Structure formats: C-alpha cells, structure tokens
Image 1: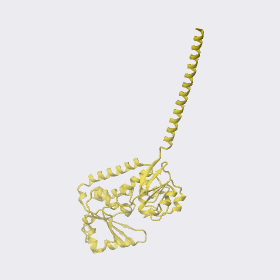
Image 2: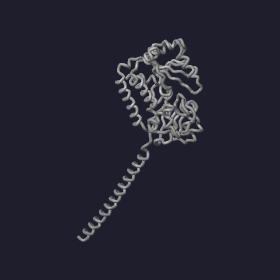
Image 3: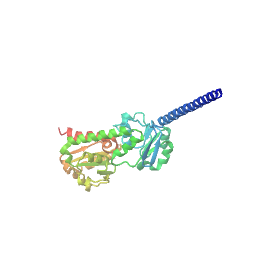
Image 4: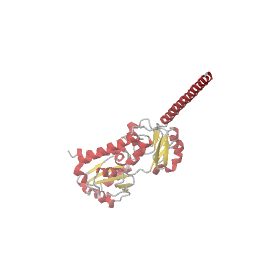
Length: 331
C-alpha cells in the first residue's frame, strides 16, 4: 500500500512538472506570436506609402509620397500647384519671365530647369528630386537618363483633354483623392455655367491664333476646344472637327474663321512678330467682312489662358472669361 501511494506521488509530481513545461512552451509561443504580429504591423506601417503608377513608359514604384518633385511640362506645373505642391524645379513657361503671370506668385523659389523642349539634366540632377514628371511626346529620348536621377513618370501626350494628364500627376504624387475632388469641382462649375448660359450655347464659337509666321484655326481637340465642347458650345462647321487645328492658314481661308463670336489670341514672345501678323490680319478687308466682326462679336483673349498653359488653373481662368463675355457684358 505504501509502495502504491509512493508511486502515485511520483506520478503526480511528474504530471505537474510536464504541465509546467507545456504551459511555459505555450507562453513562449504566445510571446513569439505577439512578436510576429508586432513585426508584421511594423512592416505594414513602414510600407504603407509604397504605391505604383502606371504611365506611358511602364510602371514606376514609389516608396513614399515624394517631397521634391521636378516637373517638365507647363500643364504639369499647374497640376502640382493646384494640388498644393510647389515643385523644386520646373521648366520655364512658354510666355513670361520665366513664369506665366497667373502662376508667378506661387512659383517664388522654384528653380528653372530649362525649357519644356530642352530641359537641363544637370540642373535636374543637382536638385536631387525624388520624383520627375515628364511627357513622352516631349521627352521620350531622355527618359532613361531621367530615370537614373530619380523615379520618372511620363504622360502620353499634351494635346486635348487636360484632365487625363492631371489625373496621372495626382496619382504620381500620391494625391489621387485630392485630384478627383479638383476635377469634380471643375465639372460642377461647368454644369453651373451651362445652366446660366442657356440658349447662348447655340452660338457658334470660332477660335483663331496668331503666331510669328503662322496663323491657326483651332478645332475641338485643342485646349480651348475641349473646354468649349464640355460646356456644349456650337462650333462653326469647319471647326467642328475632332483634331487639333488647321495650321498655316492663308488669307483665302479667312471665311473659315467666321462664327457668331470669335475669340483670338497671339503667341507674342517679345520680338513683335506675332503682334505684327495679328494686326495685318485683323485689319484686312476679308477679315473685316466676317459676320462676327461686323456685329462686334470679336474678343482678344490671353494666349496663355486659352491655349499655351494648358492646365487646370488656366482652365478655370478660361471659364472666368466665358462668364465675363457671355454673362457679365450682357447684363
């Protein structure tokens, strides 16, 4: 009997010891599980800003929201500013010294990296950007060089619908939601303006541009053409075409400039040549005989706003002009 009790005590002690070992092991497993979970959470938090951007040259992965952006197009500069991002470097505006009048105050301290057609790789590299935004149509030949400086995202082209590029730029700088809101605000403004314009949208709007050595009639796939089309304005039959423009217009084509209202602008770089050509055409008897001119429905507008800048800020300023010429002047 004593022997049996002694065996039971030994068995009980052994069982308790085994249980303690098992519980200790479980405790270690829990701690290990906690450590693994914490590590996974830390890694997730660390990688929370990693995102990919699909663009004209492929897919670019960015490890975090860029803080130093170099922009190589005029309309891209406007996109960044609208999204609350001042670039560290930007190509010079096509007009201005070196920035358009409507953005120069916001561009204080921004380094010029050359022109849109010929950006300086050396200057770009010196700024040590963490993102470069360019355009395949302009910069395809230097993409690989840019990409060795910093992750580089390219839009496909520059003409027509400015919103497509804007959406890409917003995604590239990790501000996609803000970008969608800006587009929504613009579209809402267009809808409101449409309601105010009413029957005036039936007026055929003609767009003419004077450049040194070139006169153009702009069609629907131009910057101003896209905005007029979204508003719902009628266009003269010869301009109601889904392409960019008729270039090198001769005097014999003057009748194609007519409409119920004509807006024209001149790309004057400072040598006076565009202004000289404008005056020659405007005072020509063929031009003076156009119905819109005889009715006094002709307006000179800013080339940067209606064509050259090509971005979201200019788009909103163009709507300002439409309100002024069609609503305020008719009060």
